[in-house]
Image 1 (cartoon, helix red, strand yellow):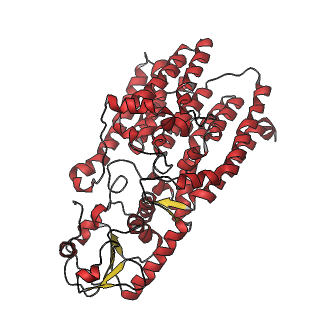
Image 2: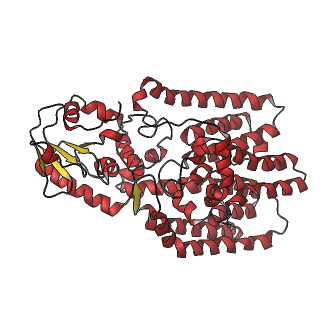
Length: 501
């Protein structure tokens, strides 16, 4: 009872956050998906069977599918993939703030905990949508935040050698999972270095952690060295002044989704650390003042990197996803502040509660606004996607279909991975020109499928080939029965473009 009374404001805020994020799940996370999410759906079903085709996101040598692994318990107890995965992503997005809040409470900084938990509340609705989407945007950040419980919620200035090793190791693993995590791991490592620059123990244990993390990184990457055909996508760190110029001209676009309270003034994300720097300088905390002052310039330097500009204005592919660690850095700075008028500052909780109420009222408006944008990836309602998959599997069962080929079709990328993930006993699927599952192309190369269903909207295959029949029940669907040639020969015969594998 004493604990509840002491932390009443924090507890109220925590429950409000959980209620709001659950509302976001109901109205957005559970309702909509995209063509990249369905790959993680399929990855979850494969992991559940103990099948690991490749280390990273199917078809690329980066972005670990950690959400798929963590969603397994929910999937095993019967929760649909469309629910299990967004729940995990939502949890991972809030976990760093929760752990940092616990750190401050353990160090008798209760007001700091309110400010830390308030940070995600004060971010725009688009941030909440972005961090509900299971696409690996926040997994690395969550991994780095595990340093707090693993070091028993000790402040960095009290770290042991083992703690330094864990920090460097988690920083490496976090980078492997999601490179954007470097925007929180690097400041933490830098601060640890500042406090221990003359400690041999710090260098020894940090190097051990980096070596272990480096070996982990090399082990995963080596798969693609020996199997380059699995690498449909990769990314290169190209540094150019043109990239920086582009970023400087559009600061609000890059930072608006991670800017607390002032949602249309993204450039203020660069100002907030400077304000912290002034505070720390006034408190004679020189090193934190320097670290805070340097941070905005480090953010600007990241804009030299071409990958940072890979995105648009949709929450499904927004450029702000590269900077999702920045709010956590601001929260970490909050954890280092001391307050004199504690009772007055506790009333600050009214602001995040008010913003959460405002966001709840305007949530659906924001969702609809974002759905009307260009997403790069394909986006669809889960209910429609499930309906189409059920219709296809019913027809496939009737016709004894063993392979479904998706060609030019409005939902090819979605159906290709969503249907086998959602429907048990669904036939093998393949999207030849952009199939991320390289092993599927290899499996089918010399295989003969007797009955094949093809989805194509631009060609009239039944008029081009006498052995192909058009389905009268399913739109843009064609049927091949009693096929006697290999899949690769069939692709050649039909003039189907197949990606290199």
